[in-house]
Image (cartoon, rainbow, N blue to C red):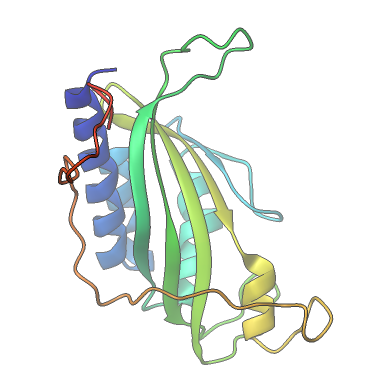
Length: 194
């Protein structure tokens, strides 16, 4: 995949994520329809996924999440894209992916996945992998740290002292889509790599 296609795909996913940051439970369908086809496939944490089609993705994942965390914001720490090497023989399979990880940050106002709402700011670690085809996100894999949501809500799921809290990035930091990393003295990149 060319660098131009990778950058275009990164822009599509970045715009999608930013529009989700502004969305509310009632207008999610509009946001998702701009970026995903009706047949989109979503894979997420138990007990939610997998989900097939926009109605299921909106109704079974995004609306319940935004009802529970109405001020939810996605804070992206790492963001990259490229072509996958998913074949058993190690050759490229031609699939285009954009990936990221970070934290969702929001006030836990209503119960979610039977976890009682804490009414506190909650940080949900996430990583997401979006497969694109012809300018649309056709498949999503999302990992979310639900056990940590339980811990933050006051339900320890591992023995006391064994849980280490990681650094939490600020949701107020300015983010931008970087097309090329700045060159540093003595550091070279493989031509055509992103």
